[in-house]
Image 1 (tube, rainbow, N blue to C red):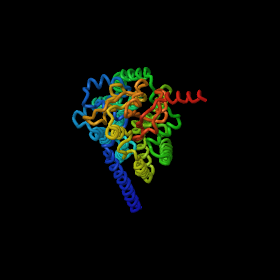
Image 2: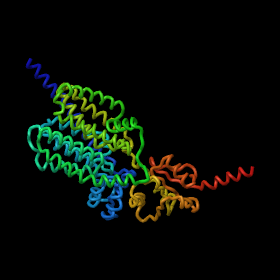
Image 3: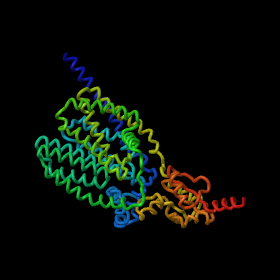
Length: 503
C-alpha cells in the first residue's frame, strides 16, 4: 500500500513536471516572439501615435492641437513622446516600447500574485499571459493595448490581495492602496475599457470591504477621487463625439460581433468550443464544491464580475455608439486568463490529470499564432510603397490626398502622410476637395490621388462627390491604400447627352 502511494506520488510529480516544462517552453517562445518584426511598417492608427510622439513638434503643440482634440485617451502617446526623447525616432525603437511594456506585465504578474497562490498557480497565470497569441500579436502594436493590459494586471491582482486581507480582518498597507488607485487612474487614461475594468474592480473591492467591514473609507474615497480625475476627460471626449459630423465606428450585427470578439481573444472556432467545454466542466465543479460559499471565492468572483459587467456596460453604451470591436476587449483578456487560472487550479486539485488542459491550451494558441500571417508582412497599409511609387517612379512633386475618411485631429493629418516622405524630397501634399480635384487631369503628367483606408464603398462615395472617375483600375498598396489618376465624369455625361440628341 505504501509502495503504491509512493508510485502514485512519483507519477503525479512527473506528470506535473512535464506539464510545467511544456507550458514553460511555449511561454518562453511566445515571449521571444513579442520582439519579432519590430521593423514592420506602421498601420494607419500607429502613424497617429508616431506623430503625436514626434520630436519635430514641441509637447505643448502636440497636447493642444492633437491630444486635446482627439477622443482617444492620451497616456500612451505622452509616454511614447517621452520614450522618443531618449531613444531614436525610428519604427523599431518605437515598437520596442509596447513590446517591453507587454513583457513587463509578465514580471508584474509573477511578483504581484497573491501570497496565498501556490507557485504552480502563479506559473499557470504567467504562462497563459505570455502564451496568449493575441497579446503577443498586439504586443508590438504602437497603440495603448500593452499598456492597458499591464495596468489591468496590476489593479486586478492587488484587488485579490485586498479581498484576501479583508477576509482575515487585516487592512492592506497604505502603499498598496496608493499603487492600486495610481494603476487605476493610469489605466483609466490608457483605454476606455481599462477604465471600465478598473471601476468594476473597485466596485467589487468596495463590496467586499463592506461585507468584511475593513477599510471601507479607502475603497470608497479612493475610487471617488480616481473617478473625478478621469470623468472630466471623458466628458470632453463625449462632447467631441457628439459634435463630430463623421462616424468612424464599425457597425456589425451583435451576434457576428460577439463571435468575432470571442475568436479574436481565444482562437479558432474548434478551440473556442473546446475551451467552452472546459469552462462548463470547471464551472459546474466549482458550484458543487463551494455552493453557498461561492461568493467568498474572490479568485472566481472578481474576474467573472469584470467580464460580465464590462459586457453589460458595453451593451448599454452600444445603444448610442457601437463598441463591439474585438481589439477594444484586449484588457478584458486579463480577466479571462485570471478565470482560466482559477479553473485550472481547481480542476488540478480535483483530478490531477486535468492539468493537461493547461499546456494543451497553450499548444492551441501557438498553433493559431503561426497562422497570423499579417505579423510577418513588412507593410500592412502600403503607405511606404505608395509614396515610393509617387516619388521614385512617377517623379511627382504634388500629390492629392483624399481625407474624407480621416478622423484624427487636423494638425496630425498631414504629418502622418508625410511620415514616409524622405528628407530632402520636395513633394507637396494637397487635401483633395471638389474644387481642386481637376488638378488630377489638368496637369501634365496627371497628378495622382492617394486614398487611405481605401474600400470600394469609400472610393464610390469620393468619386461621386467629386464628379470624377478613375483612369482604369486604381493601384492597390498593402490592404487599404489606393493610388489613381482621375478624369471628369461630367464631360462623359455631356458627351452621352449630345449623342442622344443627335439621334
